[in-house]
Length: 454
Ligand code: AMP
Image (cartoon, rainbow, N blue to C red; front, side):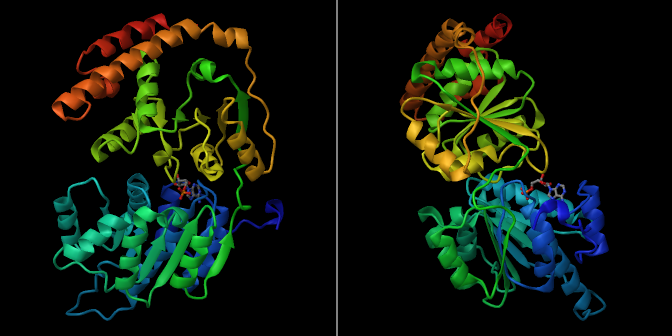
């Protein structure tokens, strides 16, 4: 069906209860998104749902609203005991492959459930288990978790079980099925009630997801709100072939062309994020790295700085390519071309979310051509070239080379210290945190931010 011919239904018309419609309005959700329009009627009817939805499509709402509605219904329908309505703990559980995504999902549940006193707990790795045990003691209605940590609690947190679970959501299911999670996911599935509703959401449908669907869902309704591997129309995608040795120059050029943008730059390795953030900071950019190598609190700290606008460039690995919802991101740069083309869809899906516009630029060097061509094949289109005069780009070469040298020195120094003391990389961390420590790199940062004018 063509979108123009569709009659736009309201949340109310789809069967959402008044309390929740009000919550949607408060969040500025005027009309349901496509995945919501298609999934909500079935989910509210009590069906299992498989949702294939592109990133930023509003899929969290598509599974959170029916769960909250069922929770309200459950409370209303149950017989009051000693004059009190029941308060069903551990009613729903959402599994997510990343900690950041779990936190974000919990935030949406809390926002939608604020009028109905919803209690939600997040169980993810890298965060103190004691705090989570205390949160479980408050008998939350909804748990959002990564599989490993949820299983840890299910196996050894006293008094905690998911025996009463009514809803299970597997979000980013394709990612939940990789080796890291497979074991704990199977253990969880063995332990939870079979008599429940299950929603499975995935941006991509793989063989493993299909297998999980067969094992886990009952007569589900399949909803595809996107063509298989598409990106949204409001996303402007470009590429630029660049010699490997000038790639940083092109990157800096693009950033100077878009000085007010909020950007995410994707690199392949954790060290790469650090190196690049150091380099960009010594050129005066407000960049911050995030990667799987950082502790959870540092990852959250970096993310919060980026969300708050303190830093406008997040340099990341694919750890940040899934699910993260930061509406202000208007540019994604693929500094390293992903070897798995589906990662491209996830990366550029960080911008142009929920109807906004955004730009995705891929810098392709001579060694990455093959991977880039695979991406064009997957998205089914040839992208236009990012326009730039090479002379102008190369006028930045000297400054960029100097910044790279400084960044390499900083990495080497902090690496050496780390080895000697067996500690975290405190000094360059402080530099990246915003020069609190006044180290050499930090001073350079301030100086060159003034110097760096095109
Ligand atoms: P998601 O795909 O669930 O990560 O959602 C992406 C973004 O869309 C989030 O910022 C949501 O708050 C927002 N969103 C979800 N549903 C709607 C809606 N019906 N109207 C407008 N924005 C929405």
